[in-house]
Structure formats: C-alpha cells, structure tokens
Figure 1: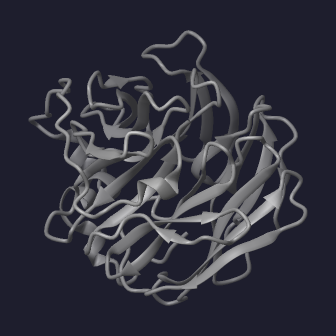
Figure 2: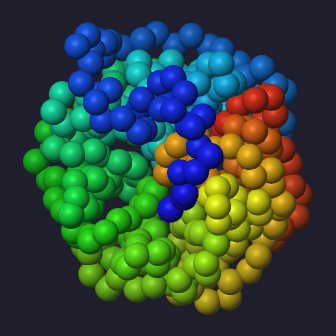
Length: 344
C-alpha cells in the first residue's frame, strides 16, 4: 500500500529482517522456543490508568532507533500496572484474546513454513505454534468467544483466509475464502460472526468489506479510497453495531502520511462520522501491516489508536467514540507503539 521510497530505515536490525527478508527465517542457529518467566518491566512513562477504565491494552513497541525491536507490552487498567511480555522472538501483529489471557501473533518458525501464528500466555509463557502452513502466515485475530483464530497466508497467487481452534494441529482448520491479489491487516469478527477487513480486489482499489464468517455475502462498505488516501484497521464495536477505521492522506513520492483521520460508521456502511482528524509528521515509518491501528474499549465507549509523533515514532491515544476526551496514553520518546488490541 505504501511506496518504498525513502524507507531505508525500515531495514534496521531485527525488524527489517523479520518483515522484509524471507532469508532471515532460515537461520542456521534458530533460538529455542522455551517458556520465559514474566519479568515485570513497567513502561518508563507515566500511564493514565484511570482514563483507560477497564481491560488490558496490548501493543507492540519498537525502538528507539538504536534498538530496532523491543517487545510486546500489556497495560492492565484495573491493576494499574504495565509489563513487558518478553516474547521469545520478534512478534508481528500481537492481538490479545477477548478474556485477556493470551496473545496471538506471527513469529519466524525457522522452518520451511517461514512465518507462523503463535499463541503465548499473557505472562510470556507457553508459546505454541498453531499454524505451520507453507507460506507466510499473517495477521491473526480472535473470534469474540476467544476459542478460534483467523489468519491469512501470503502464498501468491492465492491468499487463503483460515479459521481454526487456537491450538496446534487443530482438527477444525478450514479455509473461509481464498482471495485474489491481497487482503490487509487483521480480520475483525463481530459478536454475530461477521468479518470486516481490507481487500484489494483490483490494483490500487483498497476497500473496506464485510463478509459472513462462512465466506459468503462479501460486500463493500466504503468506496475505493481516493488517490493518495488509504484505509486502515477496520474493527467491529463490541456490540456489533458499528465499525471504526482510520484513513490517511499520503505523500505520493514517499508514501508517508501527513494526516490521520478516525471514522466510525454503522454496520451497513451508512452514517459515516469523523471522530477526529490530525496532521502528522510524515517522516519515517517501520515496515509491516500494523503501523496504523485502532481498537474499541470493552464497553464500546472509547477508541484507542496510534498516531505518528515524529521520526520513527508513534504513540497511543484514547478518545471517546463521539470525539470528546482525547488523552495521550504513551509518550516515551523515539519509540513506535502499534498493533493495538483491547481485552475485557
């Protein structure tokens, strides 16, 4: 979706290896996937826990620039604390389970399957490879009951979307639908089992689609994004009546975005409302499908999203769904906070 011009910094360290280089997955000395004990490491900045209200907010933190990959973090609103999960490898697109007990994400498998979906306990223990499919398994998400995981596989020319129980070698693994060209980001599932996601049915034609979880009745909820604009991270509200998403305006020559707008629309694509719009610093971005993301609070009254705050830096903000009460949650200089998800 983005131009690669001016993005040499994306190749820094492990992040560049993980996202951009297939060869890195074939390490001659792969690390052992052993459960790691929880080592509490509160975020260095002061977090306004009372503004969050409830649940666990999970996100990926990269940087600062000299430390190109850091880890996955948890902010526990009720406990008033935060901790570093200590993922045993680089994890892309972490998503917390609805009950806040596990995280699903993509890690290198160091086998011919390249990148697989793993689950790990919220304290960093018991990592399990639950996919092991040929190709690059990408962007897992949970069903609302927390029992199953969806993910898609980058295995051109086909992009199959899978659903399965969140365990290794599941007997119920099935392909929901096989897409042409490309889908993007995690697939969000509503409480009445409908999926919403980004799909590119034709070159340069990214749209927001809704689909039944059996793969039928795929309908576009939004028109093709205008030239220079892109949709990101459509996600269902907890009650299944609304969808939030982000749209950027981008520099045509660099692919970096200079404005970010948060929208909410009804489940049928009607009554589109702008919640907030921001001008941003268009310098620098990390690789990945998850640089720009939004999620709902468990009670559906708030939205958390990440916004660029400077060179290779973005932070998490919280806003009421009606556009009031903007609060900045993270503020550590020089880091990128992204891949937001929020449990009960």
